[in-house]
Amino acid sequence: MLINLGRLLMVGVWAFLLLNVVHPFPAPLKYFVNVALFFMVIMHGLQLVLMRATQPKGAAKLSALMQTKIFFFGVFELLAWQKKNFPKQ
Image (cartoon, rainbow, N blue to C red; front, side, top):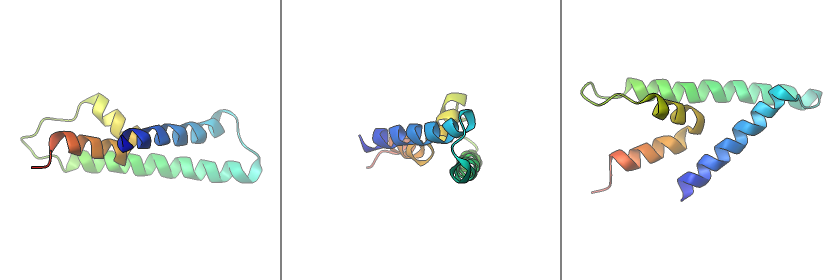
């Protein structure tokens, strides 16, 4: 439930940040939003690279769909993946 709420929140954040690319905000705000977009792309890309790098050698590779979901939803998708693959004992 909360993971889906987090995913919805991330969709809203991405929409707000990409709206600035399509229709720029007034001068001081547009620079802040551009920096935030750059930071978000770098951080989510870093999450994806670290996730791929920490996969065990014998484990199945992440699908392209899963990699895309990790990039767009970030930690919320990682939590869902962890919950699915490593259930509590």
